[in-house]
Length: 90
Image (spheres, rainbow, N blue to C red):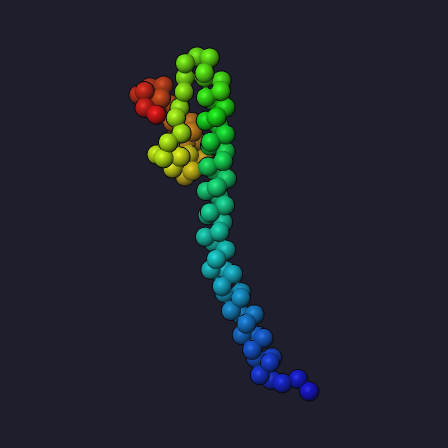
C-alpha cells in the first residue's frame, strides 16, 4: 500500500519546484541576455579598435562603456562610436 502522506508530500514538492522554477527563470533570462549583449558589444568594440588603430581611432573599455554595451549590446557599441566621432567622448 502507498502511504497518502508520501503522495501529498511529493505533489507539494513538485508544485514548489514548479513555482520556484518560474520565479527564477525570468531573472536568469535577463542575466543571460545581459551577458550575451556584453560579449557581442565588447567584440564589436574590439573589432572597431583593431581596425581603427591604423586611423588613430580608439574606444576605451571602462566601467561606463561596459554598462552601456551590456545593456544595449551592439547598438550600444554603435552609440559609443557615434559619440566618439561627433563629440570626442569615450
